Figure (cartoon, rainbow, N blue to C red):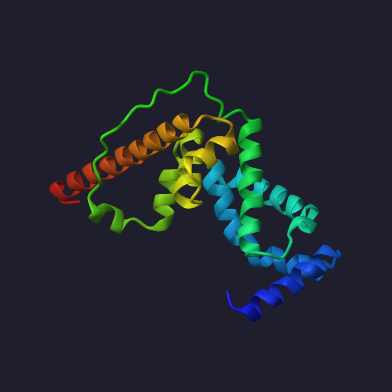
Length: 193
């Protein structure tokens, strides 16, 4: 981000901190589409994601004074929304594991690149959204948000080993889903449809 744009964003944030409705609206309009995608990735359905979007913006504006103006505002906004979604999932107890997961290693083959290349971002997001919540949450935090397994464990209250295992299981889930798509494509091409 250019220094000029960073300074402009800081002015908008400062105005929003003082309760300026226009500045708050600008922040909402700038970040709502991206944060809706973030929320949807974590909760898995669009209606709940809309609720998380609303809750996230409420928290964002209530905690706006906590943004010190150092670092990217977009990163700070994302963290507020990820935390909002994780709190929702934690309250829902979707992330609690009834028994510890052993550190199981999976030999996961890589899918054919051609299938993934043919998939749209929405199709891939649908596959991720269909994952069990605990798989989806760890997958999003690790792959999309870039957290380490130690950070994920601390964020959602599980062990680092559980985080790694849930990630491996999420990858296996995606692998199986992609293999199913491959099989269907082969069947369709063989039958001439």
